[in-house]
Figure 1 (cartoon, one colour):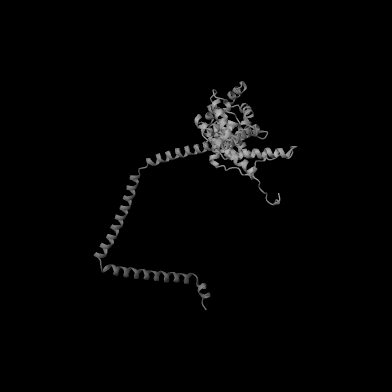
Figure 2: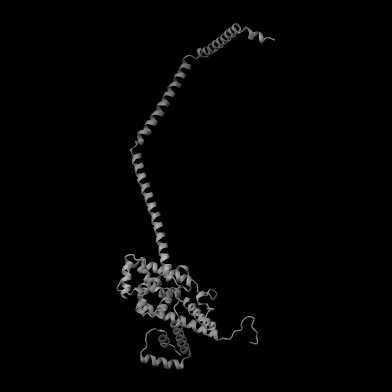
Length: 198
Length: 183
């Protein structure tokens, strides 16, 4: 934890909104990224990220300075997202509901490559949304936040062995889906209204 | 062909030692199932680690400040409502305590006994009057109708005499009135 961060936390505990604003500035990207990966769309991700920061601020007196602030914050965000998924029974995102920000950007010089990126991004998100919320959170922390299993266990309030088994199960499911997707993309399929000669 | 323990080694996130890695490599050369799983996991790992983290739209912190002030306003309103409700409940509690205290000072048993006594007294008086009338009719069974007839007759005669006397006075003092009314 940086010195600035410790000062901001102290000031924020005493009700300084501006000091917590600096912390929001610093951690908005990892928190939003986690929420986006967990919930699958930008609207819910924005809402969840904002709410996570509000909860963190209102419960800042419970924060233990011995623990990393990022870990504590991401723990709040991940539990909030898991609650939201359980409450709303969020379904797997269909292709039609592709979020706007991962659609190919027309202003970019190479629309083909950006479309490929968007397709890949969509595939990853679809794979993630097939997992159970806790498995999904474990995968996100493992791959995007590069957290060791011990820290993931702390964040998700699980044992290390439980995290390991969840990662194992999630990787197995993702690998199966990946193989199925690759097989589907390589198999020749005639498009509707396409000439049979092709 | 058995895929264990190689499948477990592939899917586990633990780091493999040299012996395990060698055994796995040898197995992957012979087993297409595990080889395809290893390829899928490698592709997956690469895709996940290289996938960029989405960022929020600009102005996230400003939106957070706005949200925070909105929440505070809502909480203030809610607290105000709760305080009003609390005060109202307290007022109701105090009023009901006073009312119940005052009502408890009234001797309800005394009031009720008084009312019952009054009703009983009235009933006894009414009973005595009716008994007196009955005893009178029993004591004077024949004279009562004679007295009633005599009294009524006297009253009628008296009324006739008064009427004649009034008409005589009218004729005496207003003779023109009599002439005008004659045909």
